[in-house]
Length: 443
Image (cartoon, rainbow, N blue to C red; front, side, top):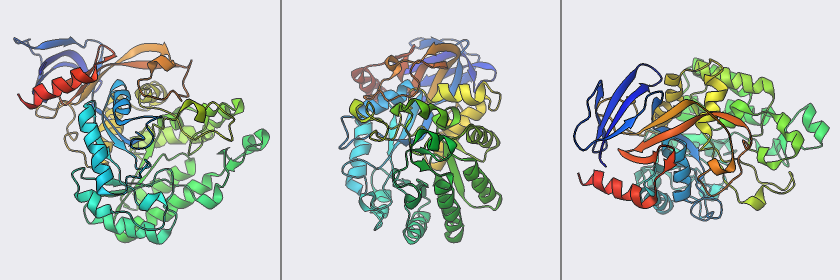
């Protein structure tokens, strides 16, 4: 079905209107009458948002298929309303060559649930010793524009400077995992009174803040774009706010879990709550929410980090860091910043679609839901509430921190390039999605 009429959705949370989609493009909006051959979707009471764009996703393939694959990860993305995901480089082999990023890109095309934009490694093997093939990855068919050693900090200041200088030549960006390794050896949770009480090695806020302070100055010095991954402390907010006031080309992301969850959850020793960077204090959560509201933090990114069961159902000290987050992201954002009055739906669209697309240089998202734009959109029912369960997940791993927590919102429909990937809350089959894309592509 290449023709859709979406009737009565609140566009960006504003006034209701109809959208007509044909051959993968929004061709009309307003008060529209159904035409022959159109599939009509009744969207009364739903909010229409542009397709969500995640700048920070771990798809694990190649090499980590026990945790996730490009297919299962993009199915999870579609279920969460995402139409673009940026796949981090910490695969096996590492995405540090043109060959590996092109492989990931092709896997995304074959899956069909979302555009997959590979993130290239900054250094060979993520080892922090020599620059990876940055130029070759940028020139490849994958057209990589975001580079990150996420999971590892580019801790050598000279290497970081060289990487920033290199990406500036083609308008790329380095996305830094801000973690000074010498300050976090053996760290298990946020450093403070609670870590001492629980007997867990502390992870100080300054380990994040020191790297951000260094790197914004380096970015200013060489005239390059810098992006800060998963910012988590009030002090980091202050540094980014200062850098932006100075005119430095820095952007920052916050994860949904850092907008909602706090270090108090570590009291359970439940490894679902073990994440890098760690869950912080309540004061940090409020600072992050305020910074997202005032634009100091530009975007929300999931840091979707799937792991096999055995990597999480073990002692806290032995457990892997990370949480899955694609399916739950919009619900958590709704609870943390929409229902608290800090952001409206138009601002959510900026933080979760247009701004991350701009940072990653993804085309087609600059005018959300505009006539002539690619038909990437999601319909959400903001009034829906449910107790979150493992059955809500569509990826391969189940390490969600939200089990049994009530969350608002439900993704009713996701449209990727004019193709329904989620219809009335249900994922379409891979065969149906691929066939629909072929129909759109061939007119």
